[in-house]
Length: 93
Length: 387
Image (tube, rainbow over all chains, first blue to last red; front, side):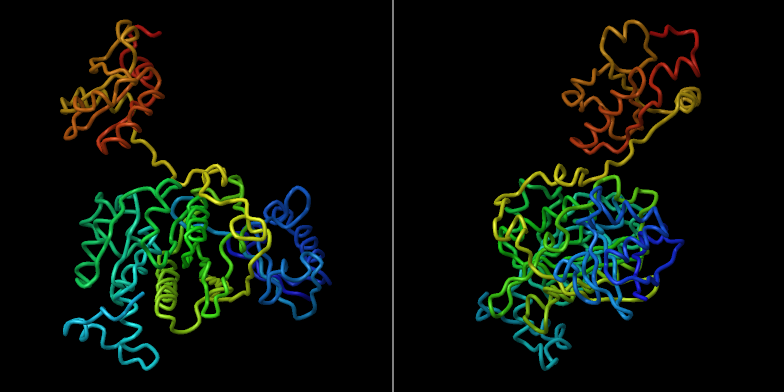
């Protein structure tokens, strides 16, 4: 089971769960699985073409999946996937 | 940066002693700090601790840019300010506090909006830029300006319980340039996916933590001590007390300094992000009933009517007529001491007049009559003519 770390701004779509355990073999499958379980996550993670949005970074371990095999990046039992969206400050939102 | 002419007085030596006795820091690094010019973008939650520590540390010249005034809602996290500074320009309040902390530092103040017209000119004289702003348009503006001017950008950002830090566009000792903000986040979120005001906010101590890390990286970039956070991206989750440091790389498709750059000068970043860099503050309002209460109580205030003369002839409620189009020309007729109520037919033009007067002349005593003269007639004087 890969572990997915949900950032605090998106936890309102995962019943405030910070870490999800997902049975999957690629990043793509992980995203598919968590957006099935939590449909409101989808528009925040994926664009209309189903690609990961460019202001949302996904790291497998310490590395950006864009520097690996993008959504095809393989995840194993011990892989930790971190979703890290762009944030710009707390005062003017 | 020539260090030959950098010397320390007896007072400075005493002040910086705890730096100078660190074996890997020493007098050399302290001299680099004194010779350095650092630009701090934004004098808020992140800027407060960053400015306090960089001033205390003895950075020689610090530029501060912020257009805002101190507000009581700032004090929960902006530890530079106290209650006596409410309503005063942040940059000036900051300078007073920081000069009291360290009189050996020189401060350059920019009480202005940072934008595509002034950014390059303001940044050009500084060695390091520290970005602590609070919106996406300014993030991309600061990034691009730093890349175009070949300056390191020490980045820090916060939201609610999350913090991020990195050092962008840093050239290491081998001459290798690190990634920048556009390598990390090629485009900003569309406005609809940016959390709204009500969902925003930030835990007060978080900018204290993240702004201090930002100051740390500024010092490392200046002095060359340690390994700056270039090519790495630090995140902090205050709720779970977890931090991570990710690896990030330059990208060929970066539009500013990738393989085929398409951006060679600063662009319109509000258009690029589809959002305003500065959220407009709400205009103060008064209801027709409250206005009537003021009149009945004999309160001293001024009433301005910004409609056209033809409308004024149909019906008026004792206001001084200054049509919206001429409001700036007649700003001298508007009181700066008394409360001033501005009205039109339904409240739209008077809102514009207030915005114009506040932006151009700094009025802070203007109230918009909610619903305009029509609401006043409906609620207070039904015998008057409606049109």
